[in-house]
Length: 340
Image 1: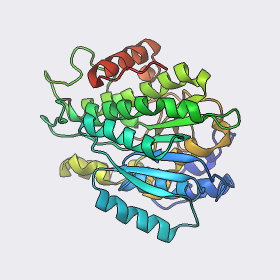
Image 2: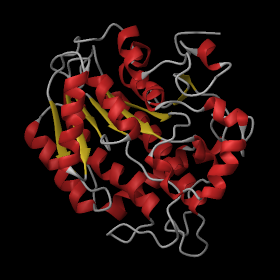
Image 3: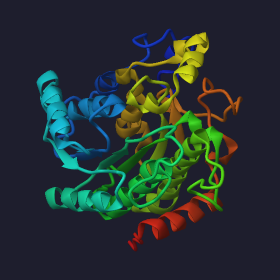
């Protein structure tokens, strides 16, 4: 049954695969009557040169807001920008900022570059991510790559941009942080004694830990900075075949392909970006957050903690003690301690 917090619920009851009746990101913008209505607002989307990031940027660009995207490859980013502008209804500014999420110094430089270009930031979408990287994969700072890229890089960027988010918040439009997580967070909470998983590496445990960290960071931001006008939600976008699966073995991919229920639930990239876009723009989220969203709606506890088909959240997704501890650890590991 549809409600303001599950407006498309009926369309997700019997999915029929990519391109079915479930909404696209651009449909979300049209359904919320936001085409060219956000002139003057500023949005930053990480990892917007492929997959869901492109479609998220494309949809948000249609609002007329100024959109900044981050990318390792600025040449590739310019191609994406040109394509979005060419295919879109009139929008605002669309600009790329170079950022390599494998290097914390690059993330810190990107934050300063953004702040030199804009004193305002209304919406931050932490979209970029990697999955199931092989054993031994590390960032340039020596962190297990999934924890380093999916969580620590976003922690560094978000922390450095929090003052701008607070400054930009108004009574009529509070600033928002949208953190992409995954149903894969069910695989693992945090391994406090070995966050780099040096003792017993499993790529899916690493992925699960990093995706739990994404939820916990969003929860922390909403709880601590919500009273100051910055709200955050975590989004599971659903199953989408993108470059994210590059490290999945052919054997594992074949198993997924034989799962008819899983395949029916898969989304196109345009549909996969819909929940992110809904979280960023829907008026129902004005002034509140600290929730887990999926299927363009408010998520519910998972009934099956093993199944990738069940999009619900694990019991460990909401853990105030863990959230506080992770924030402190992340501050220590990145060398960023903000006092606002």
